[in-house]
Figure 1 (cartoon, helix red, strand yellow):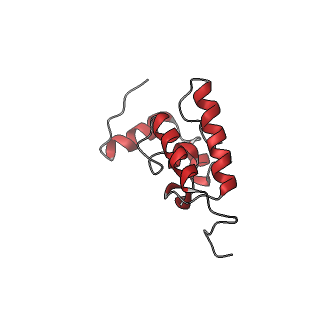
Figure 2 (cartoon, rainbow, N blue to C red):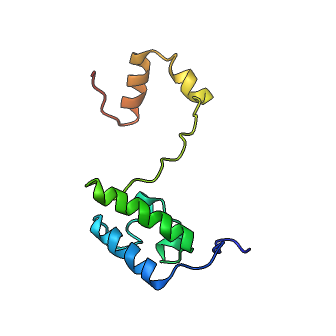
Figure 3 (tube, rainbow, N blue to C red):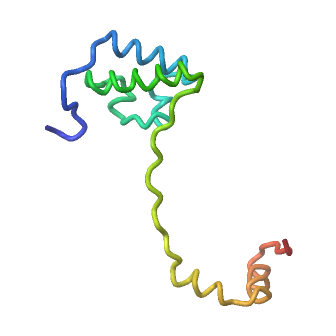
Length: 113
């Protein structure tokens, strides 16, 4: 299977129409507009779904509509664990006055919180 291709039979025109109607009812202009909030791929945002994908998204949107919610949010991606770089660790040891003076020298406006 080529990259980005469907892995099953395509959704029917009726399923795509129903999906589009549910997406519009949820407050989006179209599938492209709902791509980020619903977690759709580029292929899906263009209206190309497998039957199983369409059924799953229809069910998700219908449940959200019954509960009176907007479009359901996609699961957030896992947060990347960031460690401070060497420069950041070194800046934490610099006295506040020295850091403020350097920022002012570079044209920044510095004031106490």
